[in-house]
Image (cartoon, rainbow, N blue to C red; front, side, top):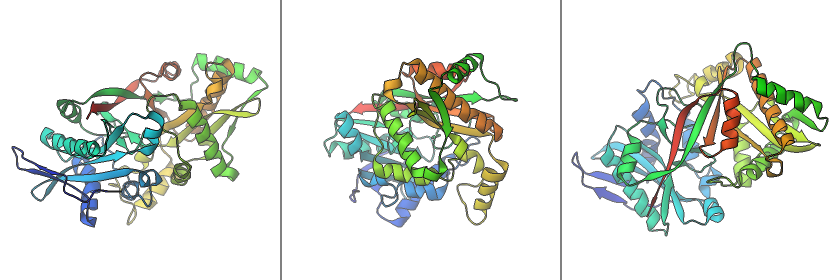
Length: 394
C-alpha cells in the first residue's frame, strides 16, 4: 500500500527540496536510477542487475513487500532528482518484537548533501509517525533478511552480492539528524589459500567429527530442491530466533527466495550436517554474482546475459559469499553440534576451492555474536567491512 499525496517541500540553501512518493512510471524509473547515478563513478561500486532491483520494489514480485504498508519517495531540486528513500511498516517485525518500530531503507543521494539526507529522513519519520510508529530504524531493504545496514567502514573494496555499498558522508548526515547506532554488522573475508589450507584447530575438529558414527554431512539433494530450501530455512529460523532483530521467513518468502537463488545454488554449495540422522545445521555458499556482473552496468541486454553465463558457468568466480548458516538451538553449545557445523562449513569451503574460489566473505555477523566471531577467527579471517543499523525515537 503506498501513499499518493505530497510528502513535503523543504527550504534549502541550494534550492527547495521537494519530496514526493512515486506516482508515475517515470517516478519509479527515477527511484531505481538513483544509485547508478550516485555511485557509477566509484571504482569499488558494483552495479546490481536492474531487472532484479525493479522486481524488489514491485509488490507483485516481492511477497515480503506486498504485506508491508510502505512508501517510496524521490527528492528533487527543481526538476533534478537528488535522492531517494523508502519508509515501511513490517508486520512480521511488529509481531515478533512488539516495539512500534517502523523502518527506512534505500537511502541514497546523487552527491554528498546533508540537507537532502535530512529532508528525506524527516519525510520518512513523518510518514511513520502518522501511522502510529514510535521509533524508526534502518536501513533495511526491506527486512533484516534482505540487504541491510549502512556501510561505515570498508569503502575501499567492492561489495559482494546482496550487500550494500555507499559513501562515507551518510553516517555523519544521519547522526546530525539525531540517529544513533543500534547495532553493527560485520563482514569477514576468508582466504582459502593455494593449495587449500585447513587451519590446525579445524583439522582436529574434522578428525573428531570423523570418529563419531552418528555425525555426517551431505550436499543438497537437487531432486528435492524446494524441500531442501524449506528445510534449511526452518533450521535458520530456529537457529536465529533469539537474535537481535530476528524476523522469520514467511512461506511465500521462502518460495520466492528459492526461485530467486536457484540459478546460483549449486549442489556442492549447500551442505547439511546431521546428528543421529536429524538435520541439525547447514552452510550455504554462493558464487559472488557481483564479480560476474562487473562492467555490465546492471544490464543483461543486448548481450550481457551471455557474458554473465560465461563468467558464472565457464570461467567461474574467484570470490563467493556465505550468506546463510545456522544450527538448531537444541544443539547450541554442544560438542557434537559444533563438530557438525564445522564439517558442513569445511565441506562447502573445500568444494568452492575446487571450483576456483579463493576468497569467501562471511556476512553479515552481529557484533555481539561471540561464538560465530570466534569461529571465523580460527580461519584468520579479517573483519574488513562494517555495516551499521541506526535508530531514533519518533
